[in-house]
Image (tube, rainbow, N blue to C red; front, side, top):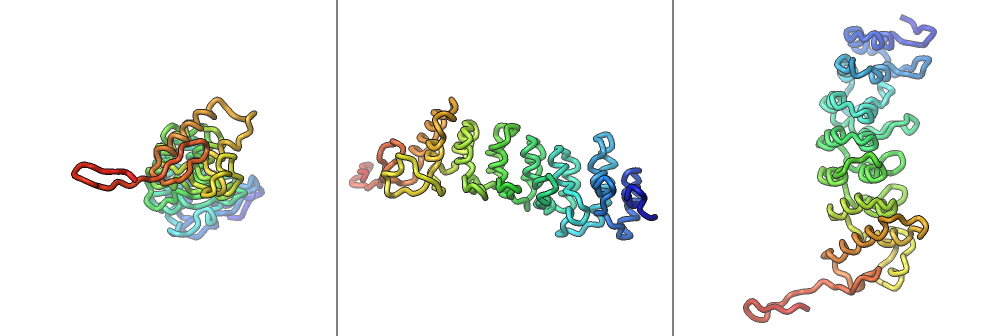
Length: 296
């Protein structure tokens, strides 16, 4: 059957008519599945547009596409559409499960930059779909530190996304996200990024998860650090102090307090504590008699 004036292939027609059997036959006979019609859509794109009322049929159609897919092969390249990312964006858990049961590695596919989609985990986080996010995190082979096209890790994505539910950062870290992994472009670790955004809840959540407030990154030291020869570049408190006074929110002093308390509670040794904290070095205990010790 030739392409028609709408440039639709037989596979387009079979998908749009919801004919699972014909889709199966066409794919078994190596029908080209990434051809676009005049509207710029591939057959799989139409499958992903089916309403929730047709989700069962959509899953059957997806299973036929998966049947002709070899594990390890780029699904997006072969079928011309980042279907898993769209399912994650829409929070369609049964569809996500269908893809991931066939090949968990599909969750690590990075869609083309011009597709308008990010990796599935990022899409789920951006849209605040906590169930989809956790389902993806449970996959043993998923990259919990996968970058989006802007250099965000999933933790950075959760921090910048106001739809994120409380506890999301802790959940990502629990499943293996690196709490100190820097942003690929700015170099800011998640905690420093949350500080820069003055996101108090996220700062507290990351500190509770033991993110390092003293991790140094490239940048100009704050006034308190410049007198400390042991320190170079910026830590989280430097990032906070760099926020212009006119841009500081009511959460600014609360974040400052939270960072200071976290550093004071830290077991990391320091000879001079920047930002006005008292001097503190790690002390050793020596036994001089039964039950009697001295600290040095």
